[in-house]
Length: 147
Image (cartoon, rainbow, N blue to C red; front, top):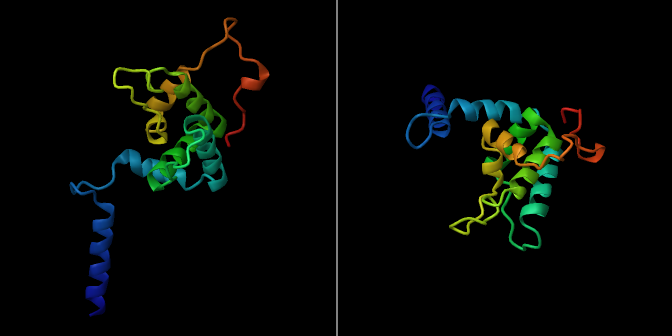
């Protein structure tokens, strides 16, 4: 009976880590999960609150910081730091298309999209307007710290 309980636990673990299609977690998601473990919850909350202030101002019903969003934000912070993540949110906000000025009149500004992967983060960072002289003032420079 004890042996069958161990087998049952192994089967449950396999079911929990396998996607509905039976393929398991992607390599990207495994890497994001590994990096996310190192990021403090306070930084994740800080980036989430910043996103809420910019993208959902005055709303009474706000999207929850669920596991999926938490994973994306934490992984992005591990790669770029909190300050750059906030700048990526700023970049999304400067994109007419992503803020709903498109044919569908639909906003594409969710945290999961902004922090989906490094390509998305870098794309949103590139949307930031660079001053004519090519230099940012001190207030807009990214922090040198990793966190």
